[in-house]
Length: 336
Ligand SMILES: Cc1cc2nc3c(=O)[nH]c(=O)nc-3n(C[C@H](O)[C@H](O)[C@H](O)COP(=O)(O)OP(=O)(O)OC[C@H]3O[C@@H](n4cnc5c(N)ncnc54)[C@H](O)[C@@H]3O)c2cc1C
Image (cartoon, rainbow, N blue to C red):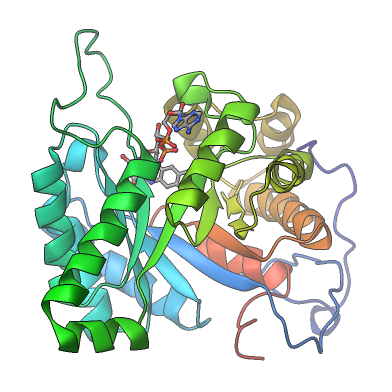
């Protein structure tokens, strides 16, 4: 995304929506009154330690206030957060109005172990999964896939469908529950190909088609910084026969240090002009305002291009996520 050159106009507070930090976010007006509203959703990760839990729960309550369609909960590389992810998802189910999606990865895990993990989640009442391959561990050149493992996300989608079918055959009451609350399986998509694995967009589209054929219901994208990246992926995917919704994953562009860390992890480069624009801000509030403005422009661009909703990577804080949605007139979108 090119950094915005047009600053939000300064108007009276009554005339413009305000972000949670009080700044004007000056969104472009979006049409209201349509029944088919964009979905809103958030990504969270389980608390890293018990001390982080109270803050995370305060964030969860703030995010709950805009009635998201779902929240997704990450799963540490190679299953490192198995217990905390499960406990967090379970608590979201029991103590909030939120619909959690549990991320699942298969790298470094046997088919039998994955089956056990899925059964645990299903027993807790989880009905939605984001099926991922996961990244091989960094800095281990001799690393090999698990000999009895599941090698791709599409194979994991198939396994999830098989486990659910087996449970329904084994238990008539489970079969009824499955009719009432069908299993939902989502997958990842990569607007410019998966840079971390050296994959191109064409490879990702082929992989997305395989995920759809295996039974995926929708996809969520990796971060990207320009509307064309997302819209181009959708156009290529549709041309290849992918019909499932592709939800754009949006990172709030308010914290340059975080953006650079994400660049390191995902291989998705942060545009230089965006970093310069944020870096030229006089203070933190101005930097936040510039980041939100850039994010709102991006969201408006992809919604205008037909995106079905917006999935915000929160990094377990609510301020920027809610400011983005407010700026794009999406806060409470599902309830209007
Ligand atoms: C929304 C989102 C959430 C994520 N959450 C987590 C998380 O919680 N925990 C975590 O560890 N990681 C997470 N990741 C990272 C993800 O696991 C890695 O990016 C991983 O490298 C790719 O996973 P995948 O599910 O796309 O795998 P796959 O689709 O299996 O792809 C893996 C590689 O195989 C290739 N490939 C597979 N099938 C085909 C095919 N049929 N044709 C051509 N090529 C194929 C792909 O191009 C790719 O290079 C997330 C990523 C996204 C976008």
